Structures are given as structure tokens and as C-alpha cells.
Length: 412
Image (tube, rainbow, N blue to C red; front, side, top):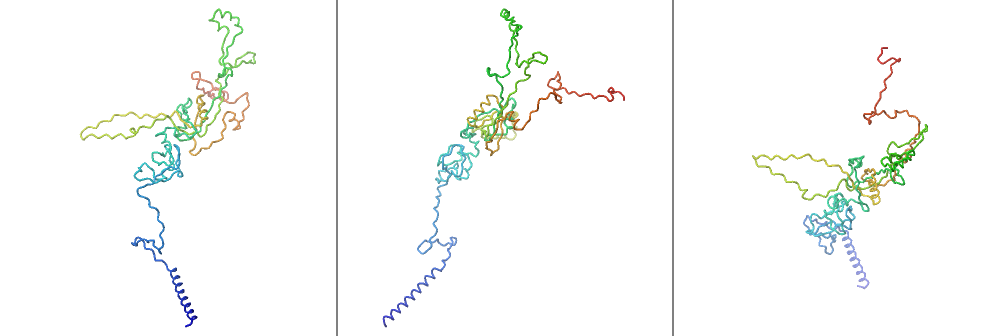
């Protein structure tokens, strides 16, 4: 056999072998893997050996001896509202965590810090309060309700015009944590610039006809003042009447004050009424029920208790103000201004542009035209006063006249 024939045979054998190898590879790629057997059927998990698809990486198991607790990511002051962005979960040994430790961040969101909470501190239930008023009542007093940069000022609610304080306190309708506007009415009175006393003044006059008796007055002091001095109180003015006589015109009533009203907006109510210290824990324990007597013995008659005393309404309120506002309010209390309160809505913290109110503002704002001074009037004027009871006017009913000018009761 020639070399050429041998080469051709080797080439043909090589092509056949390559064909078989290619067919084998194609069939191996198209073959579907057998379905995985579930754990319920009892098949063992894949061993991860060569030629076997690798299983997904399993999560790290959490040890049973640890538990997640809530910690603070930053330092917050007392009274701060806890939010979810400053909270995190940290793992702690289970045996070191008691029932007071909080393990769910949703149990904290919206609560208030009773004390200063530091970064990384484990949060416990006694460090938080659902109502900010609990902070003042339990541990820190009313100061826990004062916002930063403000001070608290006590304001009396009772006045001569409002003896029980029901008007100033909006019918006792506000409580700790509310926001109010403080309405202040100042009474401005005219003063004597030299004496700095209220007008009108009193006046003492020397009568010219009695000037000659001055020397006699020194000799007889008992008749000295009656001789040439008399006093007019209050002093008005002298006018010459149309008859030519000189008359003294004096005011018939006390001078009227010039009223100016101002408002302090959005003040926080810290305390209504007097502050009382929290009761001790022993006072909060319920009284034990008395043991009933044995059968056959008479039951003891309980002592009659008196009626429950009605609590007095609050007569003072404490509000949080800026220092300048606090000084203004204290000045208003000192000069006896009329102070009232107006309750704000729960979500209304807006500051409004408000003008001070006086008589000129009232006339200009409502376009009131002042009437001219008339010489006559058509109303009944001043009623006749009963001398026995000057506070009640006498109502006079006119008697109708008889027809045709006849006497009342005469036959027609």
C-alpha cells in the first residue's frame, strides 16, 4: 500500500472521530438537568462537588443568644421628639436585656425624651414619654414645656371686672401645651407735667376782699384760713356767662382714660392654676378592701362623710414668652392693665400683622363719620329720677285727652 493511500485513510478516520466528538458535545449541551428533589422527599442537598451547579450562598444565621435593641444615633436634649432617622438596631446579649429595653423602633417614633439621650445609648421605656406633659408632672416640673429661648411668666386671671377669671381664661378652656394670644388693654391718663399726678388738679384761692384780714389772721390763727383761702376740687376753669357773671366750670365725672390695645401672639401655656408636686407612690396605691365580719355579727356602720368640696377655679396661668415679651407683660401687670387670652388652633403657629387698636383706629378702620354738634334732639333725654331710689328712672305715661274737649268720664 502506498503512502498516499495510508494518508487518505488516516484523514478519513480523523474526520469520523471528530464528527463523533462534535455530536457528543451537542447532545450534552441540549440535555435538561434532572428536577431537583425537595427536602420533603428526603433527598440530600447537593454536595456542591465538581460538575454540579453550586447552591446560592446562605445568610449568616443569627445566634439565639442575642437580641436586637433600639439605640440612638445622636445626642438629643430632654423634650426632643424621637424620629425614625435617629434610631438604629444593635445586637446585645439576650441575658443582659430586660423588659424595660425597647426592641422595636416603631414603639419610639413620636415619643418625647424624658432626659438627655446620648449617642449610642440603649433606649428604655422610662427614658421616653408619650405626652410631653408627663415630663413636667413626673420629674422635671413645668420647665419641661418651655421652648428654647423662652421664659415662663405667671399672669393673674382674676380682676375686678372678671372676679372668677372665666372671661380671661376663655371659660377655663385652655390647658398645658396649648397656644394662646395675650390681649392687653392699657389705660392712658393725662398727667400734670410738673407734679406727675393725674389731672384735674385742686386749686386754692386767696380772696382779695379778705387780704386785709391776713394781718389779723396772724394774730388769730383759728380764723386765719377761713378768712382768705378756699379750695376748689377738682379745679376746672372760669367762664363768663352771657349775663356777665363769672362761673367756675368743673368736670362732673372722673376723667376718661385713653385705651390702647396690643397683642402678644403664639404664647405657650405652661401651667394652669397652681403647680403641685407629684404624689408619692404610696399615695397612688389603692386602699385595701375591708374584710367582712363573720356571720352572726353586726356589720359596722360606716361613718358618714361630708360633701365633696368643689375645687376652686384657677386664678393664675403661666405662659412661655420671649424675654422682651415677658418684660412687657410684667409691666402690664404692674400698671393694672386688662389682660385676656385668646385660644389658638392646634396647628396654628402663624404670626399675623396686627395694628394696635385705639379710638382713632376704630374710626378710621370702619369709616365712621362723626356727627356734627346739634343744638336740639328728638329723643327723651335724661329720664326723671325717683328721689327715693335714684338708680331707677320714673316712667311717666301721659293721660290721653277726651274727645271734643269734654272731661274724662263725661257722657257724650
